[in-house]
Picture 1 (cartoon, helix red, strand yellow):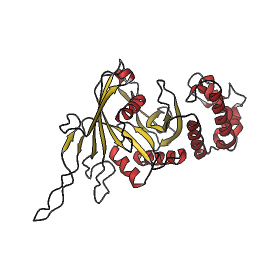
Picture 2: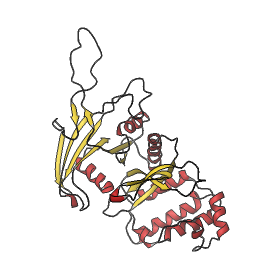
Picture 3: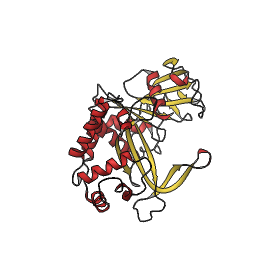
Picture 4: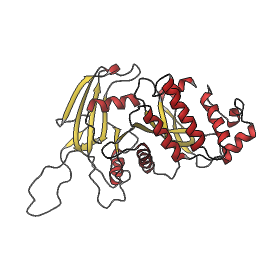
Length: 344
């Protein structure tokens, strides 16, 4: 358990105090019925050096018996809302920035035909880094980042995404729950990082519609195209609808001058050059993901960042990184550094 004390708060007495506070909150508040047995199982998972493939294995190294362990898993209660609030409070006391990463992962269950709601899932492990398709479940995780050179994070939320769930709605609900738990306000917003599998425009639209105090930074495919605001023109004598889109901005080869730009050294990446175009938007259609039932297609504006680094890690090929940003922070290098710290 000594390694846990190094997360966020550093080694030594401060880390032990935070660890003790988390364990106390877990036992007294988060775990309901059969809390003692559940707490023992959590301890067993925390100190297990390998992957636990069966709940029965947890009862071998703890004071919990085999039958008690299964009764706790069947009848025990966990207050997930209090667990989220406690995780955010511990992270805040550790001095961690309010920066979160949101992503999904698959749990393959190919040999569990009686498990409900299994769906084909992409899992890593194929030849030459390709993905395999296995039957299983999909989970979405929200973790608070430490923004340090190691891989430590603070998990705050995890839910299984059912086959009938809308992933974007689930994501927005998760962001809303985290913002409510960590005290985010319109003047002091939390930042959420998402990969390119999430539709940036729809997530931004729903966050603004629900007035959730969250900034989002989403990776874009460089094959995408954005549009500027249309120029103001005098109305045509014969009437007609006003223009909705201005100049075309192709992310692969942007032909428009950037609204802002900055370059500077960034740790292992060498010189980083960032260009930004503000108040641009994608051209939505009825077939756009999540907008098929809209009577009037919205104009969802944001900032597009194009970053180029001098070199990446030895196993990665350097290229342009395209990001969609919706928020109030305009330190371009910090935004790019934050994203690279999570996904590189």
